[in-house]
Length: 295
Image (tube, helix red, strand yellow):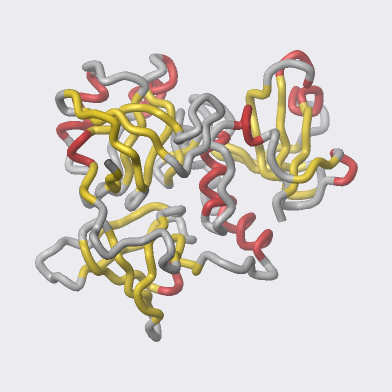
């Protein structure tokens, strides 16, 4: 059975077991707002390996079973090497809703292209939502200053300045992506994050690329096998740089977006933030193992 996410974001939990952070999020009203976690609690997501990914408003999941307050799901749009049906995990069941009857994958789609955007509803009794960059919705009508969209909860509207139609890539796609990336400078790292509330390294590039309809795998270890192969000497802005342990000969553990001039922007590491780093003279220079191009 397919469902849609009907909160601004929801985590994909590794287990459906009680944990203080899970209990805190269960109690929060995340319908109209992003989750609220302290820096220490956000770090716990990593330290206790509580979550594996994050889903955005309107994302489709395949529900396999309901156990208590959680739904065991797979996420088709988050590719995962060990499960062809998509990334597996547990979602808070109340964060899901039945897919609207008139929704179809064949409908034209838009992606939120600003850090956040507001969705207002044709039903004025519904409270407006603030959603994250990367949120993808079906387009019903192209109006003068806004798009009419089909949301998990009915018809809504989103300003054109906050979204782009997914289809042919704009000529300045790389420049737009880099501008999007820089808008998150100093945003804290969140393990498994794919939203404007916080990203991990692979979630950061995954979300940036999905705003252009380019669907990378969810994790850096798999993203490295996608795209065109290039050397670092051939790297151009918009390429992805991958890094591996054992001075580039071990397992891939990190990814960043190349800006040119030996610099990348990346969500660095748990406890850190989105930043721009020059590779020369750093461990990244030693660990660089691959360059991949998608534009």
